[in-house]
Image (cartoon, rainbow, N blue to C red):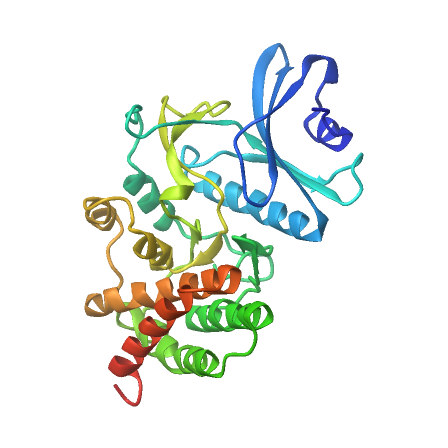
Length: 330
């Protein structure tokens, strides 16, 4: 496998001291391991390549997502070093990150902090303040992709508005493009976005009117995007670490992270207990389960938009249940 000259230039590699081999797999890209010598030391990188504008958008989002997480918790994910268009393959794009040597959970006990502890640290660290703003806001500097769904992350100071507009209404539009018009689903999403979201997520309601502080979230954190492994160039790692990958980040309510965990079973019974001991549930605690269900809803809608089929029923069930409880003056 020949290394594209754009990657050679981005990483300042010597092709005579560099090898590339296919490694792992991805549903949206081709993946490989780069082994080289830099400043007299062996270095390993992980490379993704793809075709078209969609790949460029996906890799840019992943690059910024990984580095946003890595800045707050360096041992939680690989750092990303470069992304952009390929030079030798017209229309191609690439992403290069630190190499993550994944291990089986059953055979490789972690020598570092638990995943719950690391995630709690990420979620108790305020998001950076974007240029032009005086405080952290909700959104992200670039578009990110959850699966192959490009997520609009335009900044908003109001979390309920961001979740309603940039997630629920945005994913409904994609669903209509891929699955066709669906009047019943559209009506439910509109009612949820316009009534249930402000009822449960408004700044005047959360934390006794104090609102929430935006934090960096992974955005697609289920068991398939977390494991244990060693980070090849991370000097702060202690050995085998709890790690995450393939993020689609934004600056969000920390509990947004929990929606896809609930959808796909989470990380075991004690995970949330340990996590919430360090990152307490948002007030009102009595609505915690309903907020998590509201965040789970987005992922049912996203899977329906991507794959169709039975994910629609899961979305409809959540919306109808929340409407019975909080709609019509509930």
